[in-house]
Length: 59
Image 1 (cartoon, rainbow, N blue to C red):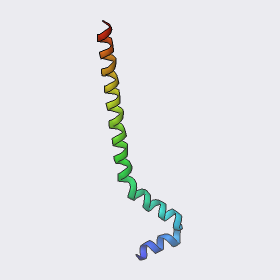
Image 2: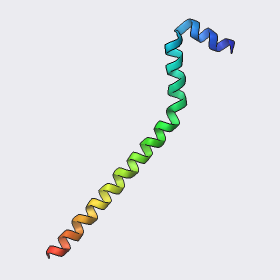
Image 3: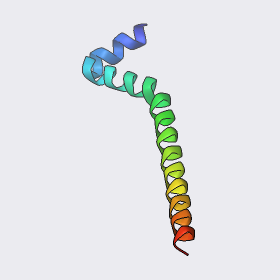
Image 4: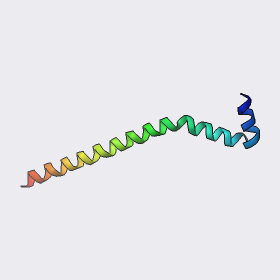
């Protein structure tokens, strides 16, 4: 606890709070990034499948 007070007095409350929140939310941000990447991949696969089906209907 004393180390936290030393950090606050040395660097200021806003900077210490920003670092704390960044470290705490890092796992959430990574999870969101993985979800977005998965959605992009699924969308691309679905689009390719729709194009293939449309092409087969025209032939």
